[in-house]
Length: 123
Image 1 (tube, rainbow, N blue to C red):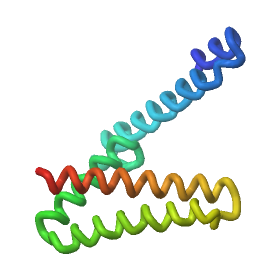
Image 2 (image 1 turned 120 degrees about the vertical axis):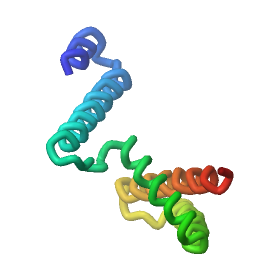
Image 3 (image 1 turned 180 degrees about the vertical axis):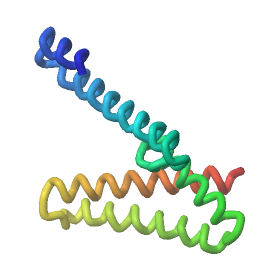
Image 4 (image 1 turned 90 degrees about the vertical axis):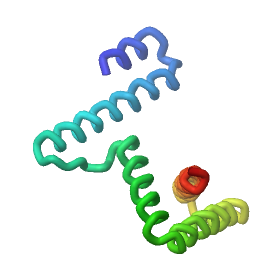
């Protein structure tokens, strides 16, 4: 955070650079909390983005091996969710900009899941 203060003092218009520094600091602190919790309890919190992705991949891999039909249903559901949220945005069925941002976040989440599932299918 000291770096962010110094950058702000030097160039108050460097919003993007400061934003990146703050986001990295948040990620680092979250990573430290994950490792600290693992040291203390032997379990992760599963909140850091790296661990979330790893957990989702493990769950989907397990689903693919044990229940291939459910795995394919998950793929279809992810695709339908992308279409549904995209339709809500295109038809302006959102009440506020925050809700629109939520829809966009859902779309990205399901797109990421779909890409991950395609990778698992190609393995």
